[in-house]
Length: 460
Image (cartoon, rainbow, N blue to C red):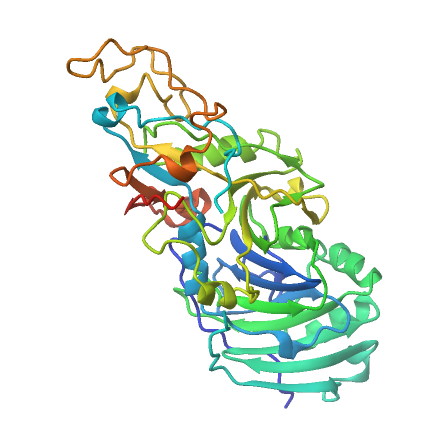
């Protein structure tokens, strides 16, 4: 009896993760699950890349396959299962901030708006022991399959890592790869074939795995892969073949400076406003990234850009610690610059893979929201609505001269441009906006994003 080269995956449920799918799901004809959310972390330095990815799935199927394009020469032994807690720490560190102000702080001149995309001022280990066992076999061909099924297909390496049993497959043509997949009870849809063929024409190999998941599962264990080159393209187009609607991506890069996407248009998510409802952030992301025309090309926005050794305001965990960075593949003696990029798109909005560029820009930026208080409506607009028609005000400080009624000065001014780095007092209430995606809420009936209360810290 043929032993199928697959793995039984334990499942990670990530309810608080905002989440490109770098591969495609496969299954028996018509039974492959769909993907709605993914999170990617790219650690890129000195011509070396570590990619960490976590993906959700949905479908009435307990066993299915995963196919991910990898460079020729890729070894299955380079794949590990990292601690998923590091992704949660990174999410909390870089999430949009929620701050709260009092009239006393307004009267004391401690409230400023920061309207520029970047603040003018700059803010800004050893790997954990891994317990998983890895076994690798190189140059193995699965001779138990028939010659027709194996034609022009070689399994170049295998590995068992944690709950994963993996195979790296090199195929010369689509017929050979499809035959190998068919022999393992998987089906490649007509929609997937031309995308896979494009990768094969470029000499790409594939990492294959089978997933055995329970009925209550929502997320796969994260996978981490090491490349001896700087990865500057993300195979996002292949991931759209597993979409049933809108897909959501949070892409993190750990590098020496800010990273940008060069072949899709940049957008901006509204911030420096006061939320008026529980879905304000998802509404802001939809407004910035989702087009009314489903065939319009996707756009992207920066949610965070900062040196990992600093943050202001900080969450409870503070700056990213060396152990978290090492788990995510950054093992340099200096802290990286963290870029957090958001994309949300339909399958027809991705017409080519995402191309990345290291910019050399290390300026800081983050999304910030002000807890709604009617008395602050003359200082901050309402998210998604603009300035209140009859704004409340803190009025004059007791015993002070009348305050100007105009909105607070822009962060572009020299007096307030560095306020994110230095001028938020420690008494200001701050937090991160919990990023429960609209897609997952629509599918699973979850309610509004959570707001985790924190205390701001002055880290300048």
